[in-house]
Image (cartoon, rainbow over all chains, first blue to last red; front, side, top):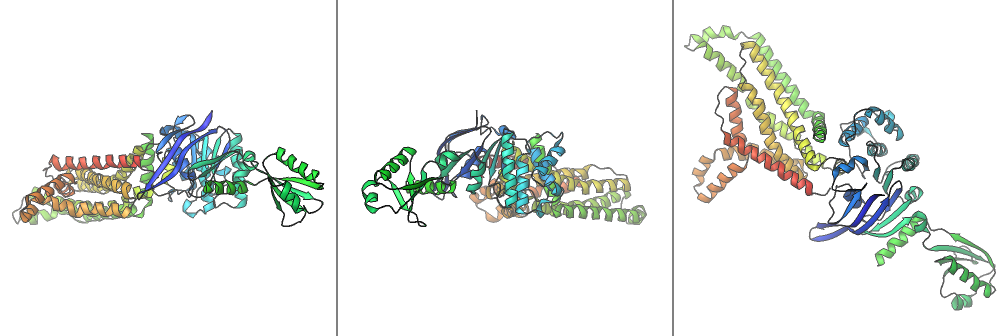
Length: 310
Length: 273
């Protein structure tokens, strides 16, 4: 069963006679009980996608379901939590007041609400600010409160748009740990963040959007290992004639740091073995072959650049 | 219904958090205390023989004094009270539509029409309570002082709140369309203070203009826009016991209210945030 099913979704904004395709024929299914990271440069359509799934923005074409229910049915949002980017809460309320307000709007039963509010504020380290007016809160505190608010209805699906924005490194770690805990409790978390390293740390699957289109989707391992990168250490410098005559098919670059070390991009292990065979056949002495893993950031930049060129 | 109540409750709380309604409440309390002090320190019965000597009927005189007291409160309440209420309520919708706030509200299991109705009733409730506090307080004071429990004065609560509701419908529509408190407030003041008084006196205007087409346009505008001037005069008349109510201004104003709310809901339902 999928938490989110998106089928041929398109959103076109008409801005002063200019058409902007925020989402372009997007089809995507997201399983239950995972952390799903959504990545993309500014204007890629990430926030628009979340807003469509929550009924805040209307799609131009296509359809989508959340928790098996069409997005137009607002009653399904009882089981959904949402923390938008740069959220604003009513300034006249205290932290507790904000929680009660959104609990009521979420249709949460009043029984044991106070206990639940205490538990959630404790979870995000905001208990001691419970009775404080939120206009006195810092950005990080607002973010923590926003996260607690998103959990008030004990949702099955949680959308988080830049949840660690303005939060200090310790707070970020706490939020990451909380997301993993929520996942372990069976919740699905849809995470939209600019911080690639953070998404990489917690996400089970990742989608990369650019200009409203899906350009890559998969697990972190699948995405980062899509093109393998090796460092080859040789006994001596590689002779030019071997590079020119025998290694034309390979992308080999001498390392800037060491004359006998080469960086090599290879698509799979078969190709790697072919390269080793050629080097050995030409009496090149290999000291070591070290596989290098691409970071998510490397892959992200490379995929976005490719997508821009296309 | 639960959803509407939740939005109503928090709109009411939002209104309470604004100083202007507290000022309104404080001024009302001050007025009531002034009346109390006046009633305690003045023996109106002792004034009657003096006035009777000038040939006036005592009963009629007491009524005239009471009516003057009522008008003294209700007349400025209609103008100044509504002015302040419009000023304070104009930002209810634009504040709700602010980026970062509306997204969370719309992400909750609540329909967009319920949000509008909740905001509507929340605004009405705060004005109703403020107006009722002053008028009901005055009614009690007059009742105890003169033994007259004339419900005419209480009608002012209904009509002033009704007038606010009609104008608030317009504020909601302008708020949804423009997300601007200033525009919502100015357009409501325009109708309340300029357009409605002008259109009420349309007979005189038409005599001045003497152009058939323009006069028909003025007539059309008269029937479209809310008749706040006529509602003001009904309030005063009912307060002093004159019942000259006509249904047309009340019903056409009600139609205006329904239309503005209906259009607001349609636009709000279609908008992306």
